[in-house]
Image (tube, rainbow, N blue to C red; front, side, top):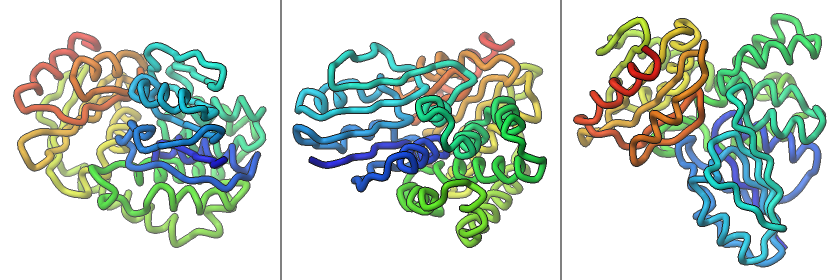
Length: 319
């Protein structure tokens, strides 16, 4: 019997698994990758009796592989906040799915564990740009301003590290970052004892954000703003967190960041306005390689000629 942990390589996926493994230590094979690599179950070839934990990847995007895994006799614990499509019902599947726009997978896991490692869940919420929820939970935990800022920074940096077109774009492989995090019961312990890792992500983040600030919007109205970034590592790394930053600065405006892929196509990062966290998944879903959640979504391959359609859909939805 093997244990296999499958998780998104962003802050939410990492912090979700950290909570579960702090609650129940388990030697396992880790299956993860860049944030946009969500068809992770295709990599898994389990045997009967294997135990799988699947976190923060869409059941809809992994539907056929999940059925294959279950049919081979594996047991699956599945937690996620993305659109699941048709939720699979199977005696070997324990599914915890919640698509509420104010929840992330780590908060679903936090509820399952009755708050045992809530600081890690708060860190993930900050990483997923659920700032209002994260602040509320942090204050309920009695954290002061400095402590809250530390969790917000760590969540942002963990999320930032997941973005890229390939693992080569990242500062740390998500599996290695998870291994460092899970050694510590609290995010504060991680920050204090992993200054080299924290510092590397902090410096990279600040540099990439500064470079992104220098780029000019190619579309800007009261309801929608859009930006192109070049086919460079810094741009691929910063796309998601810069979208979040723009959303925080302009909460009534939707944002799209398009990253050139070098072949004439683009990666697209879409954010709904913070004042109405709805519709990003619907807009992205209009495109073949699009998907995500209500407040934040993406398109893995957007053609140049499809850009006007994307902008029109966003203006229609949020204008």
